[in-house]
Length: 115
Image (cartoon, rainbow, N blue to C red; front, side, top):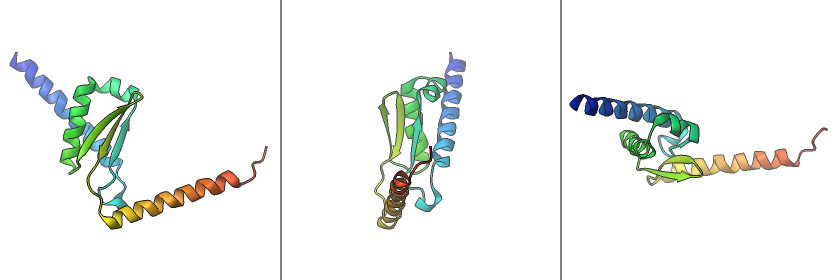
């Protein structure tokens, strides 16, 4: 029986490492580690195993990254979010980036389309 426990432990550790890598890769360097998030679709979740295990592994991966990680299942997607308090300068930078993206989208929507 201990061999089965060891196999489960190694499988879980691999899942944590994979999620940590995905979460790290989703970070924007200019936000200095804040505003971390990861969205896993139904295919990703099916591949990774039991939902409860994926959620637990995602929270562990978040702790390793210094996040206050929470998970939310919405419409078959698992959202992993960093809910730490964000420093004011990072919040301002992210707000400016979001406003610029909205402006670009709005301007693109106003351009005449060629058909």
